Image (cartoon, rainbow, N blue to C red; front, side, top):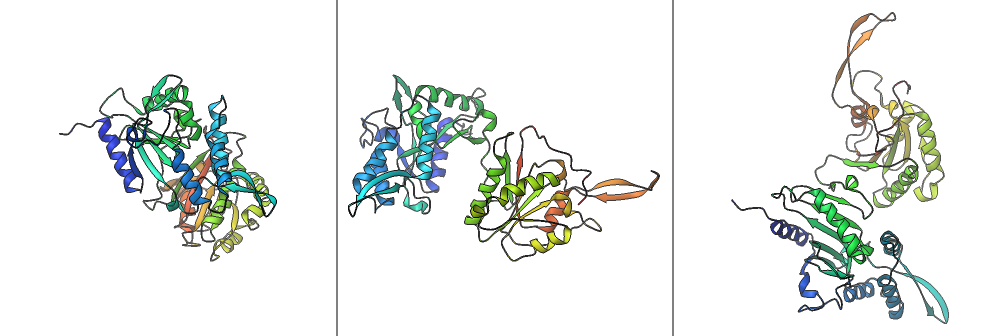
Length: 397
């Protein structure tokens, strides 16, 4: 039997990235003293030549000196605080680098983009192993680094599952060591990944171990978009608005259904959405009753709709009628908890007016009825880490 080793896991991971279109590079080859050097110093973590080439390719209408100005700004981020550096880079990466130059004898402002987000194939993807960084006399070598256009956006730490002392936790702890000894590598970090070959989790630079989560693939057809955890006062309502705005742009005129379990929560969230019609490109609608709900969901496309979960209670029986079989329906459940659970049947006592048991009835949770109505929708939920929520059991539809 072949013994599983850390190097075998590393080789397998590299093969997976190659299948995704990444070019594999053995990092010592491009080290300052390597055969094909792409770095001038071991504390240089950006592959500058690749970044320059990508910036030129992505921004052909920007003058050369302005593109060089943008690259210099990227490579000269230098604050004592690692998170401050990372936040600065993230803003430049996602919003573009502001540059100015003379055009037709007038000063002109423009943006230089580091990544072509609209055309992924226009970018340069590299997976490198044994990437040595020497900083403040500290020599460290993460297992894998993923570069996009020469920028080290992802760091991966692998452990051997056959070693009982090498766990997901020890892989995470290794990042703490790296951040303290070679912080410059993490200026450009977008994602950290830890794996023992059997389990893999991803997290951000500021996340503790409990916030590292398994990556969810869109493959498999279960239409589960996941749970988004949030803390009190973290801007949950605004994050839902921004998420909806992204969905409207990226999907084919989708219907977004926002579900709450109390009228007061529904009203509060609706007010936030109603104030964001420019971002949503449409006015959200609040469901008035069950018939109004059916009318809004039977449309061919479009709409941002607010409803309480209780409006999905069947009037008779235990099957809610199908309202739409479209796939471009996204259901966002606010404060998901027990009122949204329940696919299995439960048998309850039926009592008369004075409390005597007169029979039995079979009931389901609202989750089942919601999926009866929208069988091909994709579902996501917002939840607090402690599961705190209001009680919805007594509210009528």
